[in-house]
Image 1 (tube, helix red, strand yellow):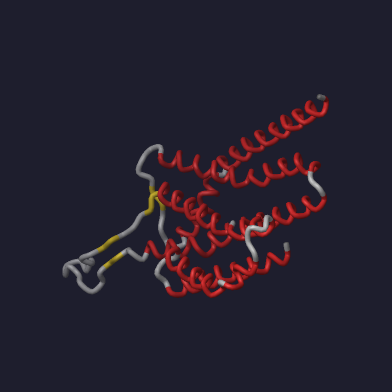
Image 2 (cartoon, rainbow, N blue to C red):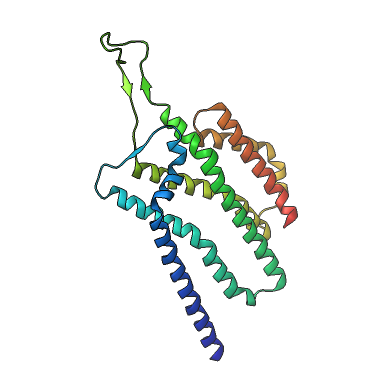
Length: 242
């Protein structure tokens, strides 16, 4: 009974830490809402465009959504640390080493996913969407020299944030494929020979996936397909590591 009392006390204490950290992180993110909005919107603002909001509550709810999403992203490592600290005494040494490797892989994939989305994928998406702006420069009205056809784009803040979070979640799922493969390898559900024999098919699959994900730009598709192919080669390599 004493042991259970100690466990419940530790769980309650760690829950207080997590709740306090969650609320503190949320209020800090909300306090720096302008800076966070600028960082998130910088890939779009570099194309000399601005944001607008069409409803009175749109900007407020958008800021709340950004603060909540960023809080969840920042608090996940802290939450996982408390889970790890609570359950690590019950694990064997070999289980601790294996779990530590999985944690390092998960953190590395998360950082790579954020950097890849922010510096490469999102600017490509913005460039593709802004390419639909049209201005006829050959035919003019004859009086003031203005073009006959002009299609300009002004992004809503809510739409951009929704697109940003959707892209971030989608790429996050793709970047967790190596972690899932490692788990399957550890549980003997996959073998390296299955990847090795189907290497050509995996390369073709990487090319098809990149064609569906990125805009119809040859360079972007080749770069993303090469990235996916190297990722698949990395999956073959990590089985020897684990």
